[in-house]
Length: 411
Image 1 (cartoon, rainbow, N blue to C red):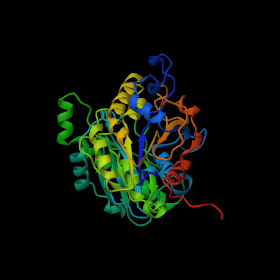
Image 2: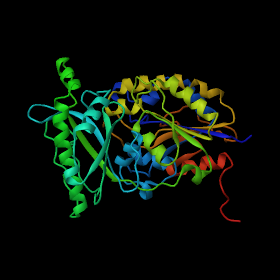
Image 3: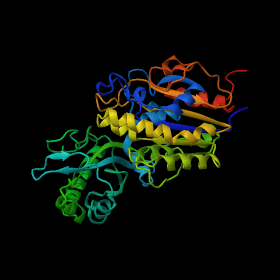
């Protein structure tokens, strides 16, 4: 039998390093994961460098690599992808940024880069859209809220460049930075000037907004400043359907991943109750994925909460959420005629609270797969599997071969 469908499940940031709080085990090793372990026992396992050994991948570059779009060739910055994911249609030449709603104190110092992980920021974005005016600079803009504290900004106009810095100091207790051009190109200066003016005008609007006034009354950090970074100029991406002759969907609460899926031509499927955090409705996400397999050849699903716990340095919370993931994946065990690919996009060790270059576990289970002797899905056990050590860009060719969609090299 040959698989007819592909479920590509990315457990965002699930991989880790030994944690003191877990007696030297990783959260994945410490978690009770009977479903993932059974999939590992019924499949072929390995470890994977999302980009290449020693390279710390971003969520953007890693997902591009996993989908077979080498980031060295296609990556132009995270901003345009994030913007596409929030619903801003990015056309070639537009400049995109990722944003955080953040908190600054009366002296202008950043006190919380995520404004208390605020959610429901659509009214703030709407007020900015209605009141910020960059026309004197010959620039237009679009701003859309994303999940939680995230948002995206796109600039339009003639003569804009994408080689500019960020106002994000990447730490708290200090003033936001001034955005500067990174080259002598007048296009980059125009973009930097537009960004600084956008931040200046939007800060006043956010400071006085009723939502933030109410948050301060309730003792919550107000979202009174936008930190913008990840500038990039929108490029062109070959469509997934043309590249692989497969129809596809993407299911993700993270706007970045939705944006990557959309720019390569995957249909974004919104799922109510999914948040991209540890409180996400994973049962709804899995149910939606199974539904999409009924009408599409390829379904990409991103589950992000473990990554968030890793960034927060919460090893026990990460372990516990992995167990929630495992329970939600139980319906996958009964899938037939489907190739199931499960991996992380990168490691997010609790010890460093950021991405690392550590390879991640991967398992492929389905018809025609030559199984190995591994019976555990974790960073160490999978390293002994039959896939051995591969790169992210190797994954789609392996998948295409297993579903008999690859082309012979040579006569």
